[in-house]
Image (cartoon, rainbow, N blue to C red):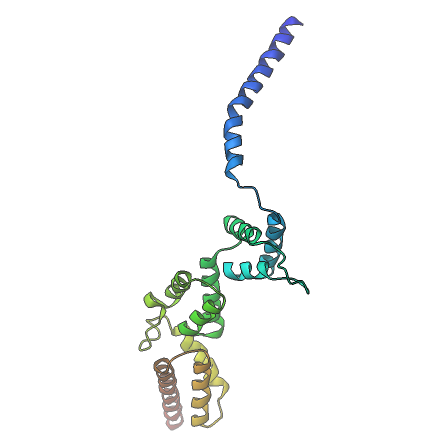
Length: 221
């Protein structure tokens, strides 16, 4: 019995010693985490719900959290609570302006064939910073965020030519002048400059001429 008591005492001493050794580091780690300001946790929960619905830039999230709700004149959360929520969302990787800019730019380019200029404007409206916007555009269009208008395929504009080709085919049967106007309007509404509009329409006209020549050769043969 005396031996068992000694063993239990030794084990208790080891555990107590371990806790004493761990306590300073645990306390310092805890102290490194700032305590949330009043309303900070509520603001963080609200931010998480907002970001689960759709992607937002940091400035958009801050603006949303800072706005008043319902008919209240006072905002829901204090500036310190809003700042805490935004910073925590960044730490938790729920909020990332660089990733947001890249995803929005790629989506608009691939699904709507928007030009670099129009994407840049959209990112500015979504309150994305200049550095993040230009990095996203450079990833899609190359340095400077603009594709070279004179060589669509080598500059990465093959997708635009493919989309324009689909639009061109939709107007099949209409007069050539009307088809050109529709295509040029479609490109212009997506923010493409005259150089790109000219190059795309000329490429499609060359394809049309080649198709007509092939059809004539088949009929003669």
